[in-house]
Length: 629
Image 1 (tube, rainbow, N blue to C red):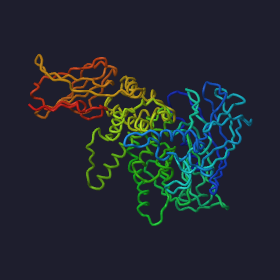
Image 2 (image 1 turned 135 degrees about the vertical axis):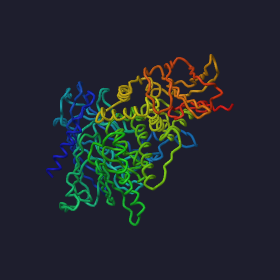
Image 3 (image 1 turned 180 degrees about the vertical axis):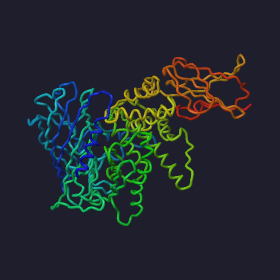
């Protein structure tokens, strides 16, 4: 036990001592004791919360999330879903989330969710509170001064809702309790002020801190969750040290004691039928897989075993390309209604590896960054999509090699063709909105989904076109190094990209993130003049970009003509060995640009703008010209 505690303290201090950009952030420590009644689906709990105001501001009130109050008829989540259901989009389908639909409106008193804070004290003094559905406002009797630390104590009760979205009971996959957003959670206060974001649909933003969570539940239930189980020898169920004896205390219930350092949320799930797989990744974390066991279903067992095996295979690639996983374990837990990421764990509807990898990659693009997902959903989902595409391809290539076959993905752009296609479809639908739109305030679920997932992925892939693949990869590692355990925004990412690339990139953010202006370039005309062959390129779309123009000659040789964009104030390095000519920058005010070369036009075979198709050109029909003389 002493060895474990020493190791834990070392990891905890290492996680909090990393040099980061100097932006203040609040700090919190939760100590929670909860007692779960599996018959009534209700829990009672107490919290002791150590809250440190590291801001320069005096706080006269606080806000607390009460997420489960969303699962009541006529809540904001309910009405918003039903209103979106009135909108018919492509393929004659309703725009609401198919998991939510109008289900909340039909819940009875035993099926709804709720969270009720019975008492809220600050430094021992009872506070006045006002409940605003999913937000509790606390009117502080005494303000919290800059740099002051206060102790908050709460008593709360909650009813677990029927599984509808992310959290709940009796999910369709058979899991009894999926306990996400289950506790009163202090809202984040940052350089922009308080963020009392109501629970309407989208995701989350939390204060960095430490969690000690004690969960008392019937002893036949098995739990998986965030953090490390500190009393494993009293619990067992596969958590105990191999070959050791489990000594459980007497009684009908067990208390599971978890601790989680430097995280911004805590999730758990519980079921009496969970089967627990443990796998140690070499030079990496211990992987825990907990799933709903089905007797005589070897295929299901194999699929969940494959989750652990795949994690072991892909982790070295993840570490090399996106950064090291900083905790000692990670849990893949069956539960919820699809896939939903949390610190050190994820809830999964099933063992499909696409979702498994996506949710794990959220560790790097949300759980380690803590970005405000309401404001920058695309930095969460889009960056994760980008990483998922890369990791899935690596896994497919590895397995093909192991099986003596060859993995081929001839779709362009490499790795990310599906996400580009999703973005192009959104543009054609005329439903696109800027990525700066608040996640809950998009006019359609469709526009939100594609903007945050697909266009966010394209943002990173296309950045590789702008600055070069190698440089983009260095940017991602530097972003991880500088901003993990902080709350980066889009400007923070762009500044890292500018520093690493040596280019100005505010224009890229301005056009691609802040607007819905699209990219469209065309080969305009070809002619000979003054002993030179000339090609005019035309900007048809509204967003300017640098241009890679590849000329192929009849003898099979190729030339790359590279035109930087004026606002970059720089140019990318050569990405391959192709002969390259660099031109003066193209000013965005000018609709056309002329490149030239020495050979005769009759020697040309083809001319193509961006053959790699990394530039998100919405109409590639005018990008390539094949010549037959």
